[in-house]
Amino acid sequence: MDLFYFDTTRFTLVSNVPSAWQQPDAPVALLATRGPGVNVAGFLRYDGSELVAFSTEESVKSVDIITFFDDFCRSRTQPTVVVLDNASTHRSAALTARLADWAEKGLRLFFLPTYSPELNRIEILWRMCKYHWLPFAAYTSFVALKKAVRELLNKVGTECKIKFA
Image 1 (cartoon, rainbow, N blue to C red):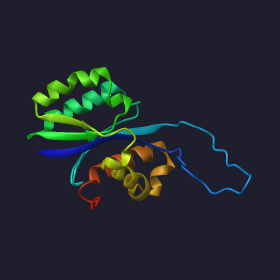
Image 2: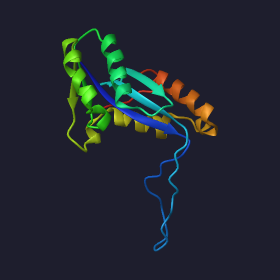
Image 3: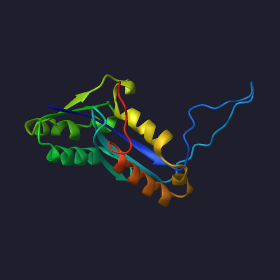
């Protein structure tokens, strides 16, 4: 049996700053902006040796997730379990309706407990991609970002490896 972790992420030119230094009594105000981005859905093998990724500039909806799972299911040659979180796109009625079909073909989904991203290994991959492996030159333009993300995704498991304890 094979084991993969699934999730989606977004690469964008607009930085997400989760925290920042500030002077006491002088709050930092960050404008909420939404620029163009590359949305990536990926299946990461448990040991980090393989990434099956799909990317789009469009929002990723439940119908897209179903298409990604259909394509992934067709590529499997042995029974496979996919671990994923409880995002609304992962728990839609349309996706739930496909579970029996995928199970018949040897693909089963295992949903993590709510609010437990630390249990999904692909989250480590997304962090490494965004904060360690993506070159600074990727942020010079959206064209450069798309190219760099595509190149990086092709290197995961070979040149870009994650070591799990």
